[in-house]
Length: 208
Image (tube, rainbow, N blue to C red):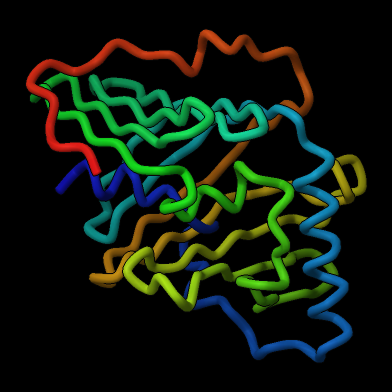
């Protein structure tokens, strides 16, 4: 279903899963998680362009806007579809077919990005840490139905905490892979709360 592909907005550049390297030594892993945590906590807001590709090669483009805590908006170009978190719930709206669904933010892999107070060491591990790239896989072992997200960061001295989020791969419990690439980042700029309000889609679907 298209809404699941849209909502699985989780992990890094194309080919990221295949690119995961051997697990680094413990010291590198600890340092990598600390650097990612510092990066996330240094961001109050962010905008970026995104390209989203599902495992069949279908691609959608749009604009991402993030404001912590708990707010994110994926606005798609060329389709009447919206994914938006308003601070408490993540909402998918397909205005073309009148479908709307909603989840607690904590039930989405995107909570890694939206809640900077979370302790990454409790549910994430470093899968790659070299001179140019840092990759972190996050999953909740108690909630395997939520799948996993692999975040990819470029090491960039001008980015918050010395990193820049290049994208992510999301793999759901049914092994459906969604890949997201980010570009054109802007950090800690004014973002209006009104961006995270939305008009309901007609024919609202069931809420959980």
